[in-house]
Length: 502
Image 1 (cartoon, rainbow, N blue to C red):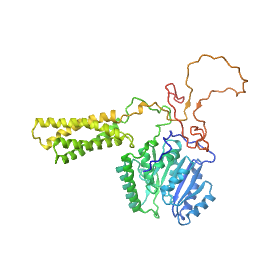
Image 2 (image 1 turned 135 degrees about the horizontal axis):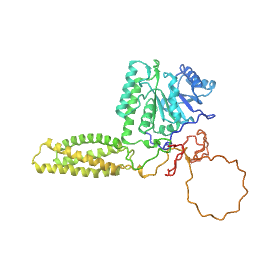
Image 3 (image 1 turned 45 degrees about the vertical axis):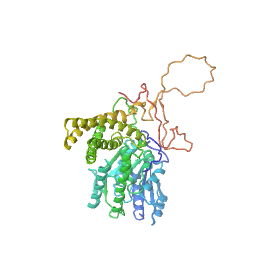
Image 4 (image 1 turned 45 degrees about the horizontal axis):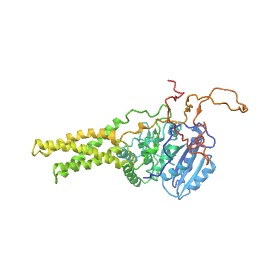
């Protein structure tokens, strides 16, 4: 999986400005390979629809995936004839490669793509991108499997599509309903951080992007679509299904080992200054209890299997110690990733060392239980030993959760000061105590001033469009940056939002 550095934590979502001269709000990419017959009708129909119904400036980009027919010539001719249409040529095949290349180079704040066959009804395009423009969502997908969708396609493709999405739900815990519908959109600021983490360059690109976005906590909006199957589709179903299953295995393994830095995709809760960190409130206790319980049940079963195996060639105490040691290492690793959400390898050795201390406490409990059983009965039955160990392990499990939560994996977020999650909030200079008056210097001639008017709040950023971008931009001057990234400032108790009328 790709782990190279990315631009960093995402800012709070903002509603995009209603208009900006020279820069489109939406860039629709059409990836094509040998589509000389379908390309022109597709672009003409899409261009007419956007010109008639879309209220923002737009662009259509044809991304040619190393076509060997006249597709590049058709794309170039369309770019010359239609305003807002451009063509891009890639010398390597791969839909994912084409989307990553064009999206990474685009200056539009909302990026979308659709298949050249236009199987999806174009009336769903505005509902697709509206949540991204408004700042409500990070990604948007068309779904053919939603209840209100209307789909016309064969039983074979219907079965494959539903089976694939069931595999994603079972293996990667995906909650979105349709991974492979060729009708998706993403905000550019999200794409800049998310795309470097996506490794696939083919058909699995969509799925990998959605899974990583969902695991990082980004919001994915689903739009029910009307969809008519293209009987002349050139997609190789068997090869695509095989590549998708390989991708599911690769992404699942990366998520399980924590090798993806998904914290780079952290998004503030909202853009209201009231949405800030609140100290002293336990976070995720119910989810942690459920996760710890599931891991505990599996660890107990694993422990019993190990104990039964070790007991065949060693005594009860030795078998218990070995089984508990192996299961404790696996339990700590699973709880670290799944229960407490610790990703990456940082601190893994320290966590395992602390886990071994917790293991020692569990060993003392279980070994003491076995010692008490042997003192009460000279030759206890194997089933009796297992029953005693189960009870002792339940007690050790409760203690292990408390130690994990309070000592091994404590929630340290409350130690940091609260931060503003928005950038566009008015800032007011802090009230400072009056200083002793100093001798006045000779006054300079007063410059002419404008007539006095009502006081205006001082804004952290000038109300300019986020589209402009220059080569000499100061990295901390966000008045003219193209990605609308904002600095976050600490919140003081005396800061209030004038919009809050409560």
